[in-house]
Length: 375
Image (tube, rainbow, N blue to C red; front, side, top):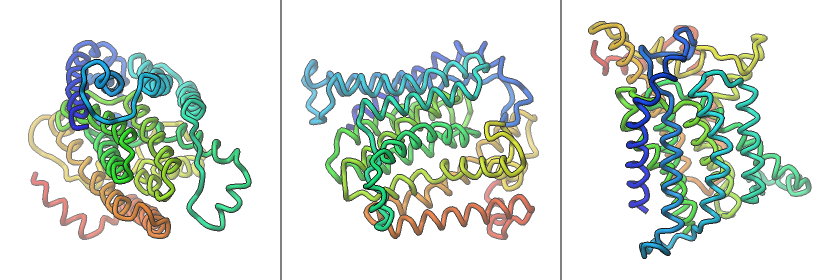
């Protein structure tokens, strides 16, 4: 499995290098006044295309390596399985890449595309959320089988946009996706599910190759295509892990992916309360507040250099936030009670931290932590 991870990393890195020059023209179309823009210059947003190319190579290798090249890996992954993953991902990723090239695709069209990918994945892979892990609710859940499929579609349609929402700074969403891939693959291997682990390692390798050029220099961005790829593949793997293995609590993927999920739900609530459309972009997300009010200002070098340094210093704060949820998720992946408690703890901590930063009440430990970054 390490071989396919390395292969995908190399393919993604090579794809990113090729797209650096080819994507210059499309990068010039990205508006200078976009509220979510925190970089100077014209940076291609085609990392998602490179990662999809790498995943295509990884899935194809898993399907043909044993039969054609005699490479024994013991992973049940045939051509039909590879084609299914490719088609489902393409339906979701292609509109994102089109948006990254043209910057003219409406948000509604992108929502429809991820919805279609969700329905297609549910049909082709037979996806369903079989249980909630909550005893009282499960009794009702089993009586409404349509909810099993509806929940799967809802998860798969929403998670790509959740990753797109947190994709604001160099290495942020990519590292979150990489950590989640590693955690989920670890549990899949413990359960003997080598096929699912292989799919996750393919995505992890593609993400790693992309990050080599994305962090810390920000030479290329994942764009909508990259965020949709992360959301679709991780969403499918989350559902399959719970669906195939009764030992896995449904709250394992919930806690694992709670940061992008809750950021999206809270953002929708925040905008609706203010009378705004949930699809309207703004600069009040948690990572953007960290950038503005927690990360220490840089005073040396030119403006572009200062923005790049602050951009890079923002991501580690959110990586730490993610690790605080991933560690208990990996340790207690069987226990719904413990996982639900940590999920609630994250939500409370998020709301407290968000409120503190908005009110300029940065806690003393945060002020001390900022001293780790010299001027």
